[in-house]
Length: 270
Image 1 (cartoon, helix red, strand yellow):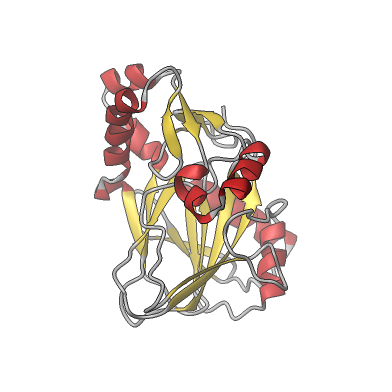
Image 2: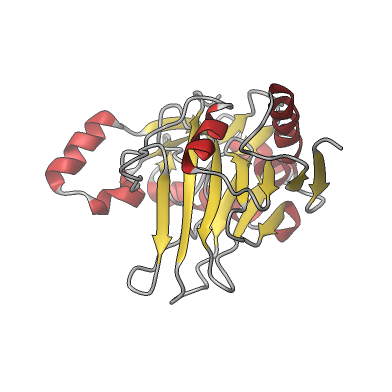
């Protein structure tokens, strides 16, 4: 029957049917890529594949990064393993796009459900292009041409010793990206700021920057530009970091939640 895309909401997201991620053809990849650009985030159920097949699928879309701060698997450093349990409660519960502190941030991420709580732990996705479209003309004019400074230390700095922090700041200096980036494949304009990594807007103090960052975050938080995904074991979510932001709900403590991610390297935003 071929691959089918079942739209999840009118704004963003689609469930993909008729494909086995362990055995994808070049034609399958072409169809998935087109659906990815159309829907911005894709979901797959019941994909009982190996870690190696997860990595191989990600590599069909580009080179994979090794994250310098998030914990990876010792046997496969391309895999970021995110775990929360009764002793260590964790979820990426701020609206963000992955690794925007890099000079060339992520193209996309592919996340797998490994251990899923009986309730909670959903991930929400927001269409950053539609959020931009719905801004007033006055706000579009206000942010046109602005550049935001993205810095890993806001999120990962407190995990490092002073010497480690100094070394990593040399390796990963603050990145300067447009507040509104242009998607290199679709041409759409998207909001590209977030609280996790943006320290301030170029030429402004932190205090002057925050009303703009807050306003754009509220646009991303609008439920009418979102979808929400209920995880199951061996479900996958594949999102375009240039087009969406995401938020993991932190509502499942003390249950255990484990997910594993590969991240496709992107290019310099413009």
